[in-house]
Amino acid sequence: MALQLFKIQSIEVASQASSVAFSNIPQGYTDLKLVGSVRSAVGNIGDFIYYYLNTPGTGAYTQRLIRGDGSSISSQANSVSYYPLQFVNGSGSTANTFGSFELYIPNYTGNAQKSFSVDILSENNSSGAYMDLQVGLWNQTAAITGMTLASGSGLYVANSTFTLYGVL
Amino acid sequence: MAIRSLKSGTFSRSTMVGNPIIMPGSYESIASATGTGSSNTITFSSIPSTYTHLQIRFIGRSSTAASSTITMSLNSDSGSNYANHMLYGEGSAMYAAQNTSQTFMRFYGMSYSSLTSGIMSAHVIDILDYANTNKYKTTRILGGFDANGSGEQGLFSGLWMSNTAVTSINLITGNGNWTADSQFALYGIA
Image 1 (cartoon, rainbow over the protein chains, first blue to last red):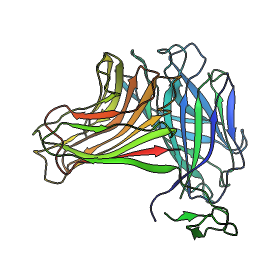
Image 2: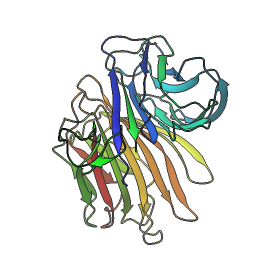
Image 3: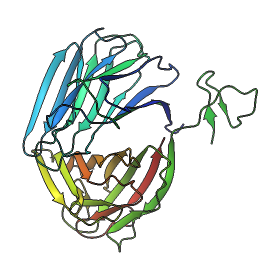
C-alpha cells in the first residue's frame, strides 16, 4: 500500500503564544510526522523549543545532532528532561523569516522506547542561520498520545504554524 | 482512490451513509515533470494556493561531466531576494556554507554524467506555508547522491524574501541540462 498522510491537527498562532499542544492523538496510524514554520519573539537570531511527549516531565530525552551555522560545523550529545528542538528563527533574524522543521516518529504506538528523527533549520539573510540533523530518544515505552511544544524564549510570534500528520 | 477508516481499519471507496467514518488523505499530487536532455530548467507553474505546504521529490542527473549545483527560484523572481545555507558532506569531509542576497537559492548533491549510468541524485524539498502572505518563504531540502566510491549529500535551506504566495518553481542545473531520466513530482499537502 502506498504511503498515506493524514492531517490530524494544525495550529496557527494568531497572536503571541507561549506554547502549543496536541492532545488525544488517534492511535490508528503507524507513524507521526510533525512539521513547523516557527518564529520566536526572543531578540536572538535563533531560539529553541522545549519539546515534550505525553505529559511534560514524564521520562527523559537524549539527543545527538550535527549542526552547521553557515561557516562552521559542530556536533552535540545532550541528555535532558525535555527534548531541545533547536533552532528556529528568533526576532533577531531577518524580518518575516520563519524556521522550518520536520520531526518524524515511527511506530509511535509501539511498546518500545520512542526514537525519532529531526531536520530543522532557521534562515536568515545573514550569517548565523542554524541547521541541524538530529536523532532523539524518549526513554518511555508508552504509546504517544500527546505532545507539547513550548517556546524557549517564552513566546511564538503570530503566523507560527505547527501541523501534525498521521502516516499509514 | 481507496480510503481507509481509522476507526475500523477497513478500506472503502464510498462516503455513503452506513460506511465507517473515513478521512481523505492530505498528500496530493499536483504535477510531475521529466527532463528532456536539452533543457536546464524544470518549471512547475500555476500552483494552486489551496494547500498548506508543498513538497517536491525528484531524482536528477546533469548532462555535465562534473559536479554541479542546483538552483531554485520562486515565481520567476530574479531579484537579489534569496539566501541559502548548507550543511553537507562527501564521505571524507563536511562543510558549512552560506550565500546571502542572491538572485536564486542553490543547493548541492547533483549526480552528473561521468558517474556510472543510472546513478541519480534524490532530493526532497519542503516549502511550508507556501501561500501564507504574512511570512517569507523558507525551503528545507534534504538529498544527494551516492556513486559507490563518491557522493555528496546534505541538508540545505533557502530563503525567498517575499510574502507573496508561491505560484511557480524553477529548478535549474548549474551546468548542463537535466537528463531525460530525471523525474520531478510536486505535491500539495493539506
